[in-house]
Each structure stands twice: as structure tokens, then as C-alpha cells.
Image 1: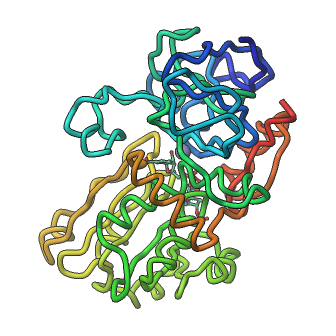
Image 2: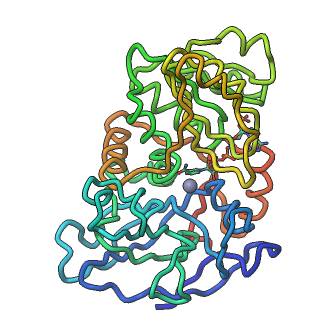
Length: 347
Ligand code: NAP
Ligand code: ZN
């Protein structure tokens, strides 16, 4: 079927309206009428070819929510009308150790929601800035929030799970001091989730203007990272730091804030490398510098259910499809509180 989407035909061109096709649902497929799609900084990195290997036309979007509009004959768990979400993963090998453990995000053959190979036209996956998507049932998430929260649930599908997964893996919770670096789409979800898990949360921002707002998100303390005296007040004190910053920066300033055996995990994925950290900041105090990529399907469902129980959603600003290029420029200036969400009925 032919549907409307918003995408780009090259790295230099702005996003524009285009027609794309979706496959007819197979026996295990779920077809979703997309209601809203969150705008992730990864969308900008990909569509502008800041990361290597962008395939065009490129239709970004991996924070997808909507209603099931058709299911294949073997689909048992979803039916027409269900509220569902699709995150960053639309397929994987289903047989490897990672898939077996529900960590499809680390499958060597994971297929991302956009820019990954597929037998469907045009030969690579096309994302959620579109009216419909057809996905194997294994990668469809159930949404248990109230329907009126649907738009604000969309960012949980990437920003939520990308911060939830490391917070769980490194056991954020009561008695733990957790830092969240960068208060953007990912960072604001990290603050909300770490707070709900019971950790003592310190938000790090480069923006003085976000100081008070971060407290409203659930941060116990806020540090403006450009102020050396404020940073010094937290030396050797963190169990875990989740760094969401989308640009290269000095990691040492944060590594020195970890206590013995503390970990800083990078989730921000800038297009060019960070300056190499000072080795002595790691070997003294046996600190770890780690990375983490989105999350598996079972833990994404666990996060969505946790958020439904705790009434957690993203703070969003709704845009029309034709406002996407302006939204990207505003994101690059840090001018969004804290996630743009596209109303796909405007496509
Ligand atoms: P975002 O909304 O643009 O937020 C990034 C935040 O980083 C900004 O709000 C800003 O916070 C801070 N920042 C500081 N200096 C910056 C600079 N020079 N340029 C840009 N940001 C700067 O981005 P996002 O959607 O949260 O994504 C953050 C990063 O995570 C991106 O690189 C994205 O590709 C990556 N990502 C990774 C995964 C994964 O699986 N690991 C998943 C999704 C996204 P302050 O104003 O508070 O300083
Ligand atoms: Zn994302």
C-alpha cells in the first residue's frame, strides 16, 4: 500500500512530503496506523548523514505509537484497535544468544526501524514519520497508559528505554547516587526514571536556564557543568553517571566524579569522537567507562508498564509534519522542553 511520509532524498536537502509503500501484513505481522512519532536526535544524525552509511530516501522516526489496523493470521496477542508502540527495532535473527535473552538490541542482525536492510521497497527500512508501519509481532509493544497520554508516551519508545536499560543494568535505586548528563529528550526521561526508581538524582546541564526546570523533573540536585566549583562539590561521589550528550566533550570532568568502582555509561552517540579520557582517571578508583544501546523488547515492555503504573510520560511539544526542519534547528540549539512529537495526521 502507498502511504504519506516525511523524509529526505539527500543529506543536504530538507525533509519533505513523499509517498512510500508498506508491505501487506504477513502471517506474523501487525499493521499500525501511526498517531504520533517522537523526534530523536538520532533522526538528525542519520538523515543528515552525520553517521556513516545513510541510505536515501531516508524517513526517520523510531518513537512510534498508534492503533493496530490489521493483523496477520498467526498473530494471537494483538488485535485491531489495540494501542501499541514500535521503538528502534523492527526485526532481528530471533535465534542468537542475545535474541534468546530478549536483548535483540545486541543481535548482530538487528534491523533498526530506519536505514537497515529489508526485502521491502526501497531495500532499507523507513521509519515513523509516516502514516502506517507493518512490523513482526515480536517487536510490537503494548501501551497501557490512558489514550489521552498517547502522544507523550511516544518518546518512551527510544528516550525512555535508552535511559531505563542502563539504569536497571547498573542497578540505580535507593541508596545510589546517579548522575544524568544533558537534559534533552533522553536526559529528561533519565531524570524521571532514576527518580522513580528511588535513586538520588543529580542532573548535569550546560544550560543555566534548565537549572530550576530539572528539579521539576525529579532531580534532587542540578549542576551547571560549566561551573568548575559546582562540579568539584561532587568529586568521587557517584555510583553511576548516564551521559546523553549528543556532541564530543571532555569525559574526564565526569569520570573524576565517580566513586570507587563507579561507572559512567555513554548513551549519547556524537558523530565525531570524544577526546580520549585520561587513563589515570580510570585506574585510580577502578572506574569504568561503558556504553549502552537502546534496550531489548522485554525490557522495553517492562519500562512501558512501569511508566503506566507510575504515571510517567515525556514532556513534549507537538509539531505538524511540515514543522520538522524547524524543529531540528531548535533541537540543535537545545530549544525544546524536552521532546518534539509529530502529529502524523498532518502528514
Ligand atoms: P537532545 O534532545 O538534542 O539532547 C541532547 C542534550 O545534550 C542537549 O539537550 C544538551 O543538554 C546536551 N548538550 C550539551 N552540549 C551539547 C552540544 N554541543 N550539542 C548537542 N547537545 C549538547 O538529544 P537526544 O535525543 O536526547 O539524544 C542524545 C544523544 O543520544 C544523541 O547523540 C542520540 O543520537 C543518542 N542516542 C543514543 C541511543 C543509544 O541507544 N545509545 C538512543 C537514542 C539516542 P543541556 O542543555 O542540558 O546541556
Ligand atoms: Zn532515538
